[in-house]
Length: 332
Image (cartoon, rainbow, N blue to C red; front, side):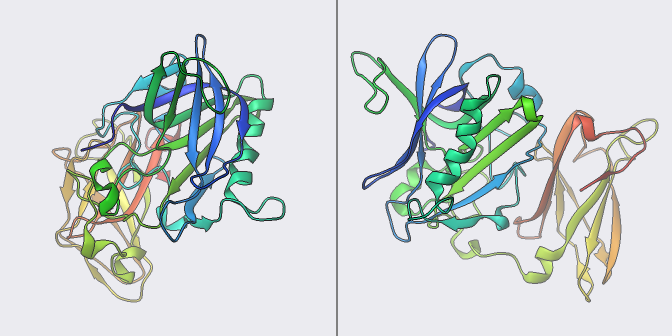
């Protein structure tokens, strides 16, 4: 079954500790208007290979940010579904998972391990008075009559599973689910910047079932090299006049061969799909005009996902309300 009490914790970071020991977690002390919380962030896997995948976006932008910023401080349970503020590394187009890299948790020298990477951004959040940290994961506590073992506050209270929570190996398969991934977003208003920190285990699969979040064993690799090359390069989100039937998406095929898109689909932020039938010529672009009956592009921000005939994600992009201009293409 999916993880329990999935949600987002919003607060001010005031202290941190590096992850050490057999099961190390980077620890962050967070406060809201009423309580103290601890964020426990995995920096090493329990199973070999132990290094985690990570990706940091120092200029994170996504349609979810406006809603997050309007939340008061504290923990909020999130419904695991598309269209809201829940995270899904595969379906939410928060970042390109192919850009994730491996990093050990603790090795000699400066600025070369996962503890130091996370500390770099948390320390900036601690130093900046108006900063806010948003931790996505599974809530625990409050644990009455029990002190937090790292920071000593009482009652113990916090959030963990700050990593991808789907496509797990058999031992953790029961935790699988869609739209329940963990992650860390840091708002640095003095720099007019959002930073996103995303983590995953090497044992996890990046192609998962849309209902259960379980790994699709024979699809854990990528789609074919040619398919992976097809990209969403632009979209007309707000055409002149009535939007339905006039919204359009431009695809690019940079390969030297034509690619048959029969059975492929475009999915919107609510996962409504418009199926494709055309072939995209070698080295050419193809404009897909949406009928308005299935996938639609919201002027308030959204995501666009390209799926192949097996339902596997080939490419995905996101845009914000601020990106949308009447009659202008949004370029990705």
